[in-house]
Image 1 (cartoon, rainbow, N blue to C red):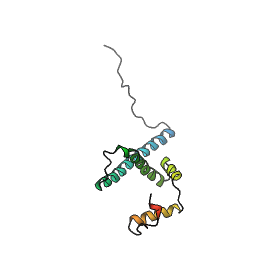
Image 2: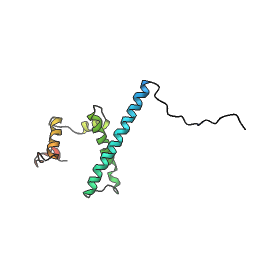
Image 3: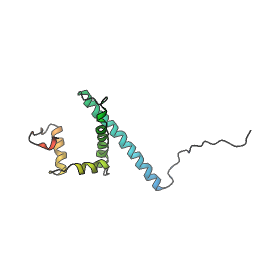
Image 4: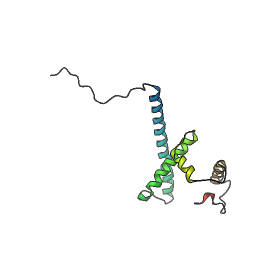
Length: 127
């Protein structure tokens, strides 16, 4: 019999030891929150698409677009609270607008809330 007490090898969580650790833990928690919400919102979009006959479940060719959708939703959340996200930078490089950005937002709400149907001559909302 030994007098040595076997202590657990894994380290227990300890509170942050300095402000850098506090900031890092807050940033990690925010990132996890935004990831969780983005997955939830994307699942809602996919569910709606599937109810309209657009199933992605057995379509591996949609994997890249699905992940871009998750990251785009996450980017939109981060940008609305004043942050930045790589997907936002990618979108800025990939798309240019002739109209002011706020006009794009206003037109989106006008169209989606039925105030102004899409003009067939306006290619802004076409691919």
